[in-house]
Each structure stands twice: as structure tokens, then as C-alpha cells.
Image 1: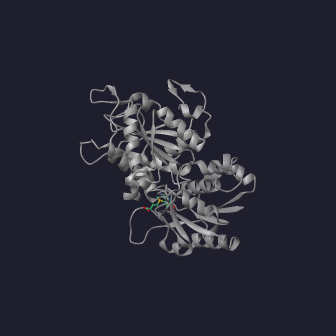
Image 2: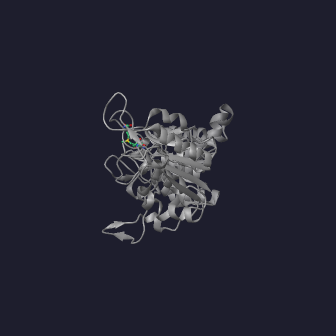
Image 3: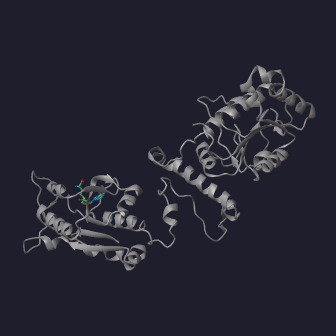
Length: 423
Ligand SMILES: C[S@@+](CC[C@H](N)C(=O)[O-])C[C@H]1O[C@@H](n2cnc3c(N)ncnc32)[C@H](O)[C@@H]1O
């Protein structure tokens, strides 16, 4: 059981907040005990004075040291293990990590200041100062309530569902994903399709992605100083990743659907990047038999022919290259190899009109699932809308430092693989 002792001149302020909901139930279950100490009980005069004018002049009153120190000493005598905390705007800012730390204590004493604050000498009797945020409250009581609430919900057995505290905002250093309940459609706004799919892995991925995205947009500081932010993957420790270079269907510059030619350089460079970043297979997708033959000839030269002896490292890279008739065949092939249908990720430099998945979010997914991923690169003027609409994730575009955005597919593939799988 965790005991809180709150030292305040307004104990009656706590009646409502501590007498409801989770904190109330936690007390009923004897998981926390909360004692309210009226500071006036530790005053020595008949007016029960707790404040006095500041030395040096100035606005307002200052809390006298004698009653506060007497109340602290009495609390320490009752709770020798107590962590004594002064609530003060100058204190360390209270975060989820602090709540977790305090949930591991056995006895906590919270001192609520009032007026213009407390006599500085009282600080010699406290273990730490905590602020609940960069604003000034009229007194420490709301701050004490915040701490009691945030700490209590972390005590095992307090929340009905043990996992719900783990899922919440901040518990893993991220903001929580959006939540929905019935009805499925409210005033034209629909619940995202993935949440109705029943596919637990997809739902988990979507939630993680949303969490990362919302945190990135609204609180990038959390990602910057979060010790559990998605780590860069250790080599080889990620979901199986395959790439496909689509030669059909892609757009030409007039937005016509065409088949592009296979190139020697693409096969070499994407295979070499693939090998470097631990990709499982590099598919060259074209329905044109003569182009398949050409691709095969290039691969065989380095795999089996003279090239295989001339340059062994190139042979290793080209061992990843595979030729496929269509995207569907590629997906089936991966499914046969891994036993699971791959999640489809498409890449595009142009605005696809769809929601984009960030590199960070996809990188995180790759580390947290075992399901294979197929990352599709387009040739010509890019992948068609039909292909993009089949994707589970449309990856954000690689952006440079200028308006010119015409990377070769080989460059884009290397950059993307590095962002997703680089150490
Ligand atoms: C009006 S405030 C005193 C502010 C003080 N004059 C100053 O500028 O720092 C009175 C009391 O409210 C509490 N308090 C105010 N803001 C707080 C915060 N952000 N976090 C924790 N306690 C706070 C403290 O106990 C403080 O002693």
C-alpha cells in the first residue's frame, strides 16, 4: 500500500477529488491511503497563523517556517521512509516518468504552498520540489491532486485492466492513438476502416503509427528526449523486407499507363542497396518476356557467368534479384516463401492524395512485427493510382533541400532503405 500525507491549509478542498472514481476505489481496496493534515494544527498561536509578511517587502504573504517544519517532522515520525515533496513552480516538472518513480515509493508527503510561497528555509526539510507545469497556481492543492491521481492509477490492481495504464499517452513516451466507440458513423465521420477489420496485427500497427505521427506533429520534444523512442534497428533484426521495382503499370510523362524498359543499372544498384540493408529479395517486375530475358541475362552473368568469379561481392548482391511477371505474382511468391502475405508499402514522389506514413512510423513497425513487408518502387513517371490504392501504407516522399525532386529510382531506393533499415 502507498500512503500519501498531504499538508495543507485547505484539507476540505480534497473531499470531492479524492472521494470519486479511481482514487476513491483505490482507497477502498486499501491500495492507497491518503491522510490530510491541516497545517493550522501545527501553529502555536490562537489565530492559527500560517503566514507572515515577507522580509524585504513586496507583495503578499509568505508561509511561516515553524508550522510547516513541525508538520513535516510529525509526518516523518509517522512514516520514516517518507519521500517529502514540496509542490512548487520552481520544482522539477512532473512527467509520467516521475509518476512511475513515485508509484514505487511506500510513503509520500506532499506539501501544498499558498500565498506567495513558503519560507525558503523549509526547503532544507524536503527531499525534492515538483512543479506540475509552467504556470502559477494559487496553491499546491490542485498540484497535489494531480500527483495523487497520476501515481495512484499506476499502482498494480488500481485500474481494472492492467494493460490500460500501459497503453496510455506517455506510458511509452508517446501520445496515445485516436480512440472511437459506437456509432460506426457519426455526423458523416466514419470510424477508420482498419479498426473494424478484426485484423489485430493491422490494428496494432495502425495505432502505433498514429501514436508516432501525433507525437511527431504535436510533441516532437517527446520523441527527442524519450529514452524508449524507436531505436534504430540492429542489423538483421526487423521484419522481412522485400523490394519490387515495377516496370508495369507505371505512368509516362503524359500520365499514360506504360511499360518501361529494364535497366542494367537499376538491377545492380537496387540489389546492392538491398544486400547492404538486409533486404530478403529484390524483385524486377515486368510482363515483357524479352525484358525478363534481358534481366535474367544480367543477373546470370554476375551470378553464374564470368562476373561471378570476377566480382564476388556483386554476385552476393545479385543473388537477391528475382524476376516476376506482375505485382500479384510477387506477392504470391513472398507469401510462399514466408508463409504470410506481405504488407504493401508504396513510394511516390508526387502528391498521391492519400495519407502518408512517415519513415519513423514504418521503421518502428518493421521492428515490431514479423510480418513481411514489400516496398514498391515505380519506374517512368511513377506508380499508377491502381497500385497506390492497393497499398497498406503510402510512404512519405523523400524530400531534398530544393524544389527539384527528380531522384532516380536507384537513389530513392537507397535513401528509403537507409531511412527504414539503416543503423
Ligand atoms: C501563488 S503560488 C506561489 C508562486 C510564487 N510566488 C512564485 O512565483 O513561484 C502558491 C503555491 O502554489 C503552488 N503552486 C503554484 N504553481 C504550481 C505549479 N506549477 N506546480 C506545483 N505547485 C504550484 C506552490 O505550492 C506555491 O507555493
